Image 1 (tube, rainbow, N blue to C red):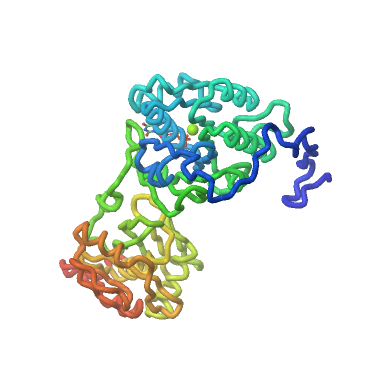
Image 2: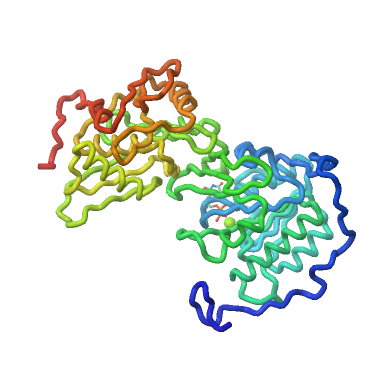
Amino acid sequence: MGRCPDCGEWGSVIEQLPPVGEGRPASLPRIPKPLADVDPAGAPVRATAVGELDRVLGGGLVAGSVTLLAGEPGIGKSTLLLQALAELARGGARTLLVSAEESVEQVRRRADRLGVPPPGLLIVAETSLPIVLAMAETLAPDVVAIDSIQTVHDPDGPGAPGSVTQVRDGAQRLVRYAKESGVATVLVGHVTKDGAIAGPRVLEHIVDTVLSFEGDRDHGVRTLRALKHRFGPTDELGVFEMSNDGLHGVPDASSLLLTERRGDASGSIVAAAIDGARPLLVEVQALVTRTNAPLPRRAAQALDGGRLSLLIAVLQERAGVGLGGFDVYANVAGGVRVAEPGLDLAIAMAVAGAHSDRRLPADTVVVGEVGLGGELRQVPQIARRLAEAARLGFRRAVVPPSTPEVPGIRLHRVADVGRALLLLEVPDDGLGARSGQE
Ligand code: TYD
Ligand code: MG
C-alpha cells in the first residue's frame, strides 16, 4: 500500500513480516490453573517512597508491570523519575536508569540538586534497544526506567527513531521483557501540546499504567494522574511543587492553590472542586472587558473553553447578563487544570461578578453544575468538598438545593444561576461602578 488510509500520507507505510518463531511458546508453557489458586501477592508492589507518586499508583510499582510516565517536554518527568529511582535504591532496590536523551554527566548534575544519589542506582546512556534489553537481562535489576521511549530504537528495525513503528515496537518488546523477567519497568513518553504524535497515544493500550504529569510551565504546581491503571484506582490525584531542589509533594494542595488569593477582588470565586477522589479548593478568576470587535473573545486557561462559552450563553439567556460586547477571560489560578462540572457555578459567578464589579464575601465557596435552563444541579461528593472548605476556614457556601448540612458551614441553597447572582455584593468602599468602562 503506497498511501496510508488513515492519515493520507504517501510512502509512510512499512511492510512488516512476523518474526520467525512468533506464536510458538518461547520457553516453558504456562499451564492453566484455577483462578482461586492464584496467589494475589505473587506480584509484589514496591513503594517508591515518593508519597504523591505512590498515592497515584495505589501503593507503588508492581513487579513485571510497565508504567508510562507521559507529559510535555520540560514538565519534570526526568526529575520525578530520578527522585523515585533514588528513593527505590535507598530502600535497597537495584535500579537501572537508561538515559537515552541526556549524558550521564547531565543526569548527575540534576541528581546533585536533589541530594546525593545512592550507590544502588545504576545509570547508562544508551539509545539502542537491543543493547538496553541485553544489559537489563545481564544486570537483572528490580526496576528499569527508560528516558525516553521516543529516543530508544532498534537500529535494524524499520522506521526512524521516534516514528510510530519504532516507538510501538520498542514498547512491545519492553513489555514482553517486563512480563518475562518480573522487572517493574517505567517508560518516559513525551506528549506534544496537541496530544497525539508518535507517542503515548499509541502506547496506551500496550502498557499497564499510564501516568499523566501536567502543569503550567510558568507555575511550580504539577499534577500527576493515572489515566489507566491495571492495578488500582485511576481517581487519585498527586500534587507536587517544583522547587530548586526537585519536586516536593504537596499533601495540602488546597491551601497552596489559595495562598496568592486576594479575597477582595471582583471576578474571583473559590470553587470547591474534586479531582478524582481528592477535594481541591481552587480560585476561579474572570476578567470582562468591553470590546469593539465583531466577535468578542472567550479565552479559558486551565479550564474547559467550551464550558466557558456555554456558561456565558446561560448567563445571557437565563440571567440577563449581557456579555455581547465584552471579551471574557477565565482561568483557574495556579495553573492546575480542573475540568469538572462542579466548577460551573463558580465560573458563572466569577464572570458575572467581573462584569458588574461585585463579589462574594471572602469566606464563601461555590459549588454546583449549571444546566442549560440555568438551573443548579447537584454534584458528586458534595459533603467532602464542603468539609475541605470548612477545614480551610470557609464559613459559607453557595450550593444546589439538595445539599445536606455540613458542620461549620452556612449553606445558601439556590435553585438557579439568577438567584445565585443576587448573592454577589457591591464592594465595601462603595465604588461599585466600573471605572473607565463607559
Ligand atoms: P525535567 O525533569 O528535565 O523535565 P522533562 O524530563 O519532563 O523534560 O525538568 C524540567 C524543568 O524543571 C527544567 O526546566 C528545570 C526544572 N527543574 C527545577 O526547577 N528544579 C529542579 O530541581 C530540577 C531538577 C529541575
Ligand atoms: Mg527529560
